[in-house]
Image (tube, rainbow, N blue to C red):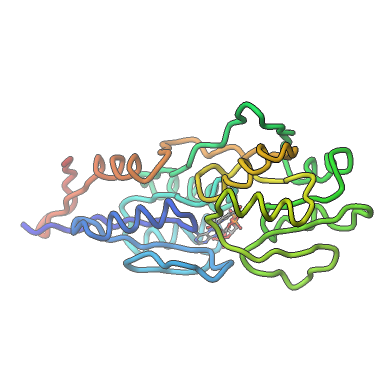
Length: 261
Ligand code: NAP
């Protein structure tokens, strides 16, 4: 009897996905295929097999799962990446595969914070003139359209890579993690009056929220889209425990033999 490795599709684009891929890379029981959307040039690539680009919706993802003989799916995409998470839920339902969502906890307001919580980008843009005129946008380049064409506002947008159309925005190109002192210095030097942020959670981009608190700046905090129903883990350790609990041994001679380790 030989041990057939469990084949796992890891939908990534987050630090948690990278951490999980690195943890699983040293475990011979697993074969991990990491998947990235390919929107930005990745800073660090996960170990093991990597594929880049969309699958072609839920049907395309289901076809990929079948073709590659995937045993488990871990959706470790960003909390605001709702379309791929929906597709993963649909594709796993169709192929009857176990799926885990690795979803870091949302940030919560702390004493001293002045948050204006809004449901989406449109509501965030609508909240702006009343709160200040010099705005720091930490929402990602795909979301800038909601804030465009607003006379009287100075819009300073931070992103990893510059979009083609920069009209109306001052762009700060930078990739996290960010340090509190640097965020504070940036806000002071640019005269920031309001911070707009997605409630992404995690440590890597939290410094802007802490800096806003220290400087007494209001934060327009955009709520997350609802998570897909199903199993959920808050970090790579919990995801690893979920994966280990589903360890599957396959016998060479005769089909699948579920085996809990
Ligand atoms: P999205 O709106 O949920 O996804 C749009 C489409 O992009 C999906 O339907 C899928 O195309 C493709 N896609 C997304 N993630 C993929 C992945 N990991 N592997 C293969 N295809 C993927 O996603 P998004 O908000 O644009 O985010 C894109 C990626 O950037 C995600 O992987 C996410 O983890 C990462 N990211 C997002 C944010 C954010 O704020 N949204 C922040 C940091 C990192 P098909 O339908 O053709 O399969």
